[in-house]
Length: 438
Ligand code: SF4
Image 1 (spheres, rainbow, N blue to C red):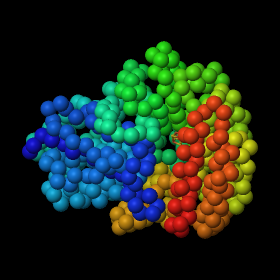
Image 2 (image 1 turned 180 degrees about the horizontal axis):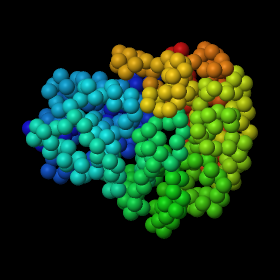
Image 3 (image 1 turned 45 degrees about the horizontal axis):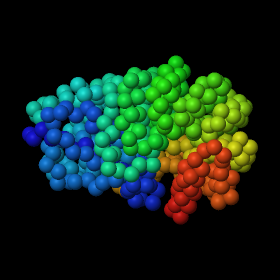
Image 4 (image 1 turned 120 degrees about the horizontal axis):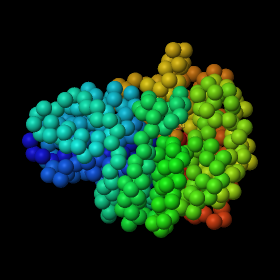
């Protein structure tokens, strides 16, 4: 077999069924740089980041490696199917929820679990070259090496993703992270992250840290900010972390100095009973003051909410609307709760006979439901019907994406208003598209 590997990161289908090209350039751009950095020098390598390029189904590579985040994988399955028909050896790996694995395993020659570093990748590829490929590899989590961002050199990027850790120490019932990483997190060395930032800085000044929880370990975050400031990297960045960062004005001031301009929080619900039930260990009544503290530090906020939890009622939508206005959140990100197979909440709802969720086979038959943001109810809510949940959600999305609401949220002093406007108009576009597709 020719020692050449074709790396593919599939794009994904939105709710209108179209494969996304280019539109979400910054999103999910970390998998390919990680993968590229692991391929041995003596192997030939081609890559396709499908958001930007078309897949070459006639590539002469003997091995195809498909990676991607979970909602890319439905489309990834179709790509694997086509390549299989061309007798390629196909390996699948990357971010894996139970659903993606169930879907991909029968279609590919091998699956790896975890994140392989250069050594583990060499072993897998050599097994493929020697016709000795195993069905499954457990490679652990190896992320402590500089990633290869050269694949983006000739591309226009809104921002580039960098990662400082994987996993999260919280164990929220609806989230895949606890199932994938067992409630643990893995930190990269500050040296490796700084090397990445220096590579990325040549491509863009705007960085999105892709960590599930940027506040996994405070001392690590402090060390990172200290180095960014000392090395004068002059970057502007956003990250997602626990809202409890609002308790630490000193840390927030340091982050601002290091270039932080926007923080994303998974608030999920304003109802404490909901939070307790899904084991989200936050205090809803503290949300507003924590967010105010972040704003005081000169950092803007985006927050995720989910709808359809057991203590939600038809009034919940109005409560969230008032909260968004009152707290002056810059970007409100709404989803109907999407039950993900393998998570504890999915299992509970399944045990209660409340799941109405397509099987992997249904997905492959071109039902583009695994689309974010999720605007459909794939389960039976407790205090309203699925239709009422969807209706309340659409009305709220509409109110939050009027021109007036967008300008009120986006026209801020001391921040790149264009970025906030862009993100808020993306929300409006997505809402409009979803509404058309109902
Ligand atoms: S805090 Fe966020 S990343 Fe961590 S388990 Fe909860 S939802 Fe997942």
